Image (cartoon, rainbow, N blue to C red):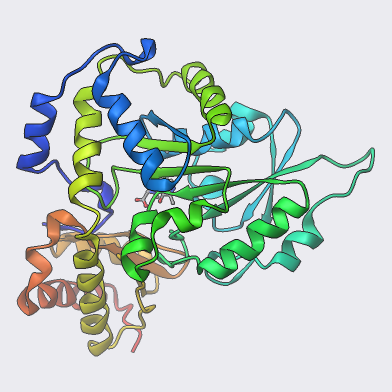
Length: 346
Ligand code: TLP
C-alpha cells in the first residue's frame, strides 16, 4: 500500500526512536521536563519568538491561540478554507465562545481590502472583531505558500485595525523549504504561531505555540484547562526536537516528488493543480468513489477541495516515489481507479 493520505501517517525513524529512548524526562506540568524545555526554547528561537509551548496537537495549539487572542463573544476572521474553520470540529465555539467570520480569497490569501471591509466598527449591535487567523502553507488550497509580501500586508492591516494575528503554521516549514525564506519572517507578522512536528517533519505527535512571554504564559494555563497538560512528555518531545533538527531540510525531497507525481498525472490526462509543496490536488469526479477504487489499487488518498482528490508526499514514501517506476505505480493506480468508476477527465 502506498499511503498518500497525509504527512501525518509518517512513523518515527530509527534515529528518532533512539532520541526518544534516551530523552531525560520530568513532570512537565511542574515545568520540570528538560527535553520539553529544550524543545520549547529551540522552537521559540527558530521562529524568532520569546517563548513556546508544547501541546499534543495542531488543533490544540490553534485553539489555544484562538483562546488567548479573544474573549467570549468576540469575532475571529479567517479564510473560508481555513483548517480552523473546516477541520477543527467547531472548537472555537465549544472552547472559546467566539464567532467565526469567513473571508474569500485566491489560494488562501486574504486581501487587506477584504479584511478592512469585513472588520466591524464599534456599534452596540456588533460583535467585536478581535483576531485574524492566517494559514501557511494553506491546506485546502493545495499546500500553497502564503507569499510573504501578501502576508505582511494583511497582517499589517489587521494590526492597524486593532486585531491580533494568529498563524496556523502546521506546514510552515514546507513554505520555508519551497521558497528559501526563513519561517521566522512570516512569524514576525503574527502574535501567535502554531507549528506541527507531526506533519512533514515526521514526529509521531506534538505541536508548538510560539509568541511573546505573556501570551505563552497565558497559553500554558489554557493548555491545562483544555486537558493538554502532559507529564513525562520528554519521550515525545525528543522526537519533535529530532524532527526540527534533522527533517526540515529534507522537505524539499517531498516537494520534488509531488512535482514528479503532478507531471506523471498530467501526462496521463488528469487536470492537476501545480504543487507548490507536498500536496497534490487531482481533479476527479465523484472523488469519494475514486478514492475507494484507488485504495483497491493499493494507493491511499483523501478528498481535497470539492471535485479534487488530495495526494500527499512525505518521509515514509520518499524512497517509493524516488524513481519513475514508483511514480508510474501511483499514476497507473489512478488510471485504473478512474476506469473503474469511469471518472477520468481528459
Ligand atoms: N491536517 C490534517 C487533517 O486534519 C485535515 C491533514 O491531513 O492535512 N492546521 C493545518 C493547516 C492542518 O493541515 C492540520 C492537520 C492541523 C492544523 C491540525 O493538526 P492536528 O492533526 O495535529 O490536530
